[in-house]
Amino acid sequence: MKYLTELKKLNLPTDQYAVFGSGPLAIRNLRSNEDIDIIVTDELWQTLMDKYKPNKKGFLEVGVIEILNHWEPYFDKSEPLIKNADFIEGIPFVKLEHIKSWKERMGREKDLNDVKLIDDYLKQQKTI
Image (cartoon, rainbow, N blue to C red; front, side, top):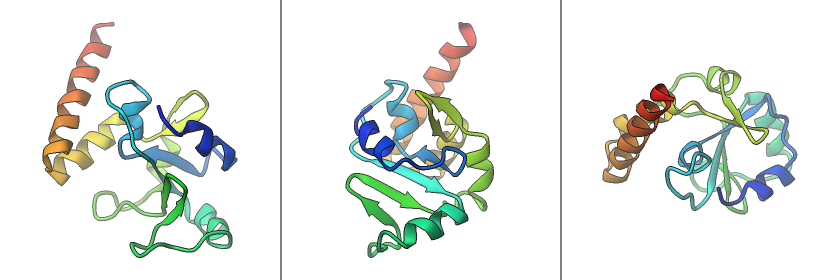
């Protein structure tokens, strides 16, 4: 997965964020990523707002890392997604089941391709 070094350099508390978007697929070698999207707790968001200015979309950007404090309208609360994240290489990743749900609702061609990749991966994991 690209850009893990950049993410680790931010030295964020692992109980206050999780990688989402293409990251949970990329870390499992299902497809590549062109950036890293993370969702953070409200507490961490406030801390980061002191260091970085929001972009036009209202998110924080640190190089190739986009930081959000919500994932609405897809998920009402960020904290459960962070609390229940899968840890891979010491980094929290939103569970694939949540990524799949979000991508199904997005419905774009690239998202539907990702849904198939996730389904195939989860089926393979059940047979191991």
